[in-house]
Each structure stands twice: as C-alpha cells, then as structure tokens.
Image 1 (cartoon, rainbow, N blue to C red):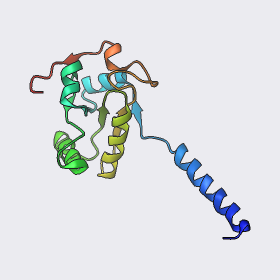
Image 2 (image 1 turned 90 degrees about the vertical axis):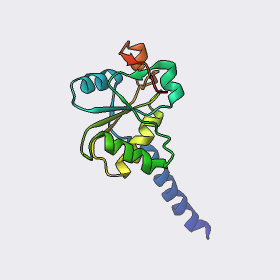
Image 3 (image 1 turned 120 degrees about the vertical axis):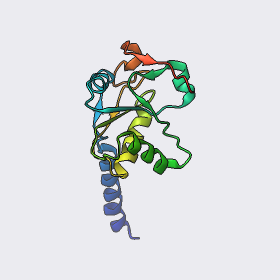
Length: 147
C-alpha cells in the first residue's frame, strides 16, 4: 500500500474506533429507581449474580434470581428471563449485578434476543461510579434460601 493510501486508511480506522468508544450503553436506572419501579409493579427486577453472591448479600427484594451464567449460555439465560415475564418481549425488565458491568453486558444480550425494554441498574448491589448501590442505600434484601 502506498504511503498516500495509508493515511486515509488510518484516519478511517481511527474514526471507526472513536465511534465505537462513543457508543452509548442501553438505558439505565439507579438502584433506588429500580426498587421503586419493581415495588410498584412497573418492571420485573432480575438479579443476575451467582448463588455465592446471593448468599453473601441477599437478593434485591422483589428480584427474581436468574444467573447470567446459564448452562445453555446466552440462549438459556434469555429463555429463563422470557419465562419470568410470561413470554412478553416488551415487558420492562431491570437487570442488577454487583456493580453494573455484567448487567450492562446482559442487557445487550437480551436486546439481541428481541427484548425491547431492558434496563441496567448502573450502580448495582455494591455501588459503582454511577452511585452508592442497593446495599449502601439500605434497600431491602431477602435471604437466598435455595442457594
């Protein structure tokens, strides 16, 4: 490739990289907002952490515990969530994990599987740069009896 063609190719690659970095994550909720909406029946809250994490801190009150690490992979996780919302791909769902990273990842997975209204609880259970999190806010948790 001549040096005159390399510069535009490099510029194009940089623009593509910049656009990828600027891509906005899906919609988010704070732990407090997720709690309020779940309590009001306005959305289904799903705690996607592991049984060890559920035993350690409890499960967000009102949340359905559905591990993101399903034995059948992302398809199995999506099927479990779909069963939880009775087959309604447009039902509002909020995913919560420890700090919001895994919930954002699984938010995209559910969107890829056809779910329309999936929120990530950005501050999670333990808190993050997005906020203090469920536990520090003193929001209710329930013990995991079957973990």
